[in-house]
Image (cartoon, rainbow, N blue to C red; front, side, top):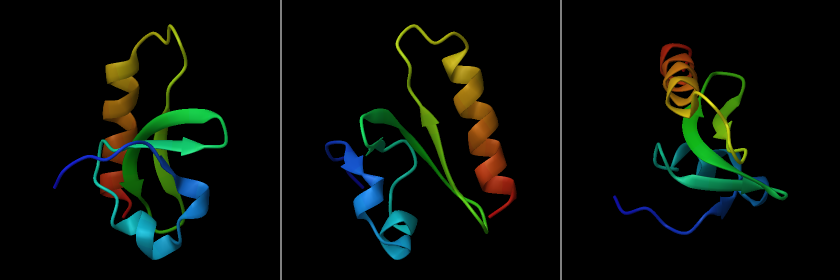
Length: 70
């Protein structure tokens, strides 16, 4: 599957969010982040902040959470 431009997750239905590819850039208002999946009760994304430290560790931890609780 090919990545697309950042997608506004607030404009998507639950079913459309299920179809998002892991790693897809997403928007929620003015916040930009990477889509990491879904759990039974929530959507999981790592929100990007300029100068964030430990980005890879944060993404890895959140991805494991989304994967284990889906």
